[in-house]
Image (cartoon, helix red, strand yellow):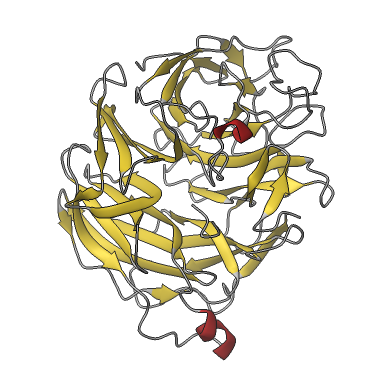
Amino acid sequence: MKSRKPVIASLVVFALTATVPVFPLLAGPPTTPANIDVSQRSTNESEEAIAVNPLNPSNIVIVTNVVVPAAGMFAAVSFDGGSTWATRIIGNNDNLGAACCDPSLSFDEFGNLFLAYLFNVGNTVPIALSTDGGLSFNIIATIAKPATAKTQTSDERRGLFRFVDQPTIVAGKGEVWVVVNGGGPIVASGAPVTGLGAVGGFIAPEVVAGTNNCTYGDVAIGPSGQVMQVCTLTESGQGGGRLYVNVDPDGLGPAGFGAHSIFVAETHVGGFDFIAAQPDRSIDAEPGLAWDRTGGPHNGRVYLVYTLEQKNESDNTDIYVRYSDDDGATWSAGVRVNDDNTNNSQFLPKISLDPTTGNIAVIWYDARNDLGTGGPGDTDGIPNTDAQVWGAFSTDGGRTFSKNIQISAGTSNSYDAHNGIDYGDYSGLSFYGGIAYRERAAAQAISRLVFVKPHRLRLGFQLG
């Protein structure tokens, strides 16, 4: 949840049964799914995290922001692929303390489930661990302000840890890493993992060089244990928006992140870019990373998804993906993922890579069907204010994407939530074993997207 400050809905799942070939593209749209309520709450959930256990893909865990009287987050756990769920509020002054928001989840190869989030009060980020598939969590570390910042300029030191926001955690290759927006700069820390529950101490938090005023990013672990973070310069404003990456070539080794960040792309999306579909909260480019560690044909390729505004302040925002095969030193040209022919907004993208295949899934909020003329894509007679959730797959290493799929059966208008944060700042997606699980705010949802052939996609429901 951005430190400056979704339709009110419970957590809902989608039932989707259309078959969508990647090549050739279908002439008509796939069937949209039925929506099924998981949380059974009348109030809103937003800024969702979702993770699938690689040791038991039927084990799915969700944590989201939630409207509660004092503190807490909504959590849901399934051990049957989503047919049934155990739900509860966590972080409501229990052993996780008084939680505010901004959950991030990641399973590792040992079945450890890591959770990062924010406290209601304070300038630290707790890291919690579950060894029972998300049924219980315990805090194992608290990431605090770095004691020193030897790589920073005096200007960067003055800005250090003005606040903490949007932590992101990722685990794999015997490591777990968290990056935190410290008010621009980005702060990173990691720990070794050797087995279930066997997590070492987190290294001293490191201020990533070149990230002063760079915010709202992501982190990924490469096949050799290298670590990449991405962030957006600058934090504020409606114009500008430049994406930079920085790589630690040896992860938990002595090298640390590079002395200079690498420029990737212009976005024309500032940290607070107000669009008609997100009028109170605004959007950022919300860059996301996914690194291929499969050993397959694109092993070592790292993908970057982001939002690009075609003309500054046009609200014509699109979703793009680039990739790098040299640890971020150079990047491909951007590929436009959304295939609509409108000038309407697409925003808050999320990317996930299937570690069993190397295929990638991308989802986002999409206002393409809101022309302001009524119908299923319009709730208020005003164009570009209503959104649905759409998605696409790539099976060729990010060079092309499938025909876009409308995932949400309904249409949302964030203003109707009257909660000041619209759809929130980010979405949740987890892709494993050919199934991409998706949840969303403002009619929160999870969808199950299933590959059935190398060149065909099938989207099928198994959540309830």
